[in-house]
Length: 536
Length: 93
Image (cartoon, rainbow over all chains, first blue to last red; front, side):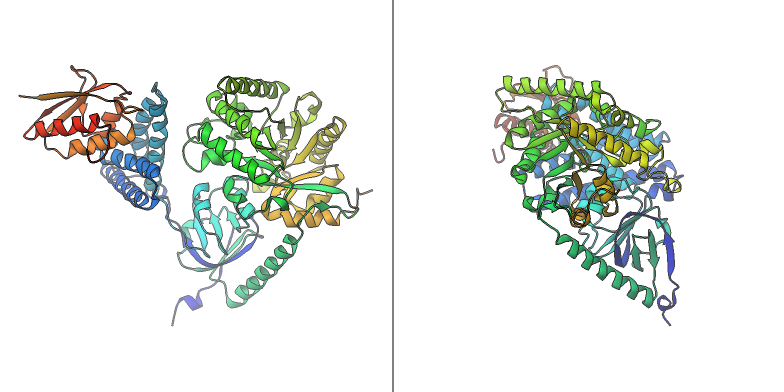
């Protein structure tokens, strides 16, 4: 008799990170070998590095064969040539012989090389540091057992964690994601919500078996392994109902109007150009939030001015006259970026993040401001600064922007000063909003809520505190009132705006611009259409 | 010990960058001889077969590249390397 047919259904609880239901086989991505074998001998560490180098070389050779574009191929052959050169890893092997673990030894060896390129006088050689970082990270991924794996579609993927680049490279059609790490506010969760991929976090994935039949109920934060036929059937039906509901909600397109006919603008949050393909600019009121940190994050290297300019310009062109609100780099907090954010912040959410980091890394910030000033010429571009706490920070950004503009004009480049606004996510800024010289305001509710409540959104025990409270709505009203009185616009771009159940409460505060994940467009428009006016 | 020497002016627009370095080290590896590369006639010398070392010289445009080689095919190696640099790292020259 087959064992499997008699296996008892196994329910595993996690935390919901993106709603929805998925049914399919479990695909377990290779676990981090580090964790599995914490104490290895130098000989084993040495072998681990030898294997990781060989695997990286195999990846790159395969990639080089597939790219079919001369520039990409040249970059890859450079990386391959570096790997073929024993001199590259030699200091790493020496460190391993001295007792260091492979990953640390390799990083130390290659970081020394990276530093020497970073210090080069010539911009071309400085830029090679990013090739080395890319190579470093690829080998580290192999050392950690997290190498690029091809994920088939229609499956439930279980893994320790997943980098955004891998999420984006996966076809999630009818699939789902189960992670041990990550949180509902991680980048992967944001992407999963935006693309309607059911996802839960906080699941011990070690004991999950590859190929098991499973149901992912990401509405309840539940994974059911080997469900019985009745459970399967129930979920099949629920999934079908959800699909039907989504399609009905998606039918709410065109201008959003409340029941009393008042116009409300609904914009979208995006992370890059990829999300705009398949979306008609006529269906939205613009881009309310472009999170630029993804340009920096998915690829292990910092994009330069020209690359950023091309992306921003194409976004503005896509929007065809509608506003495109680009947020300057919001790194730090839960969004670390290798080579940029400070490690060892005692409390990353209260540390050097957002504008605090940008004002300390002027090289990176200036390149972004230059790209934005150039793209502003192409259409309706707006720029907003994240994590502003005091007016001086915004003043400094404005001064830097003006200086950038002057530099560009001197160089004979076309550039323009876009409207400069601020994110309102720090309570100090919300309370003294009158003091800020901002052209517009955008409320970042995710951070505002957790700063107001002093409760992390990622701490499940505090879920009752880290939610929109009267205190939060009071601050939102304060900002909206001030903006209305002074003839400026306020939008809200956090998850709160995309929650149909909160739409009425936000409209009650006077908010008339929502910016939501594209998956929430339909449901939010539908909720706006039901709104009959401020509650008495 | 008898080392053959050669030198050539490099005119490549961005200097001894990634693509030229890949070509140069690949070519050097095709020879049995031990081959060194330097930016002055007196060194310091680096192994011309190591891309890590060659790139580390960060040789800018208009540098003169010096080679020295020792081995059975030293003469052919130097000729080939000089031709490569002189031909601006084009293939098939």
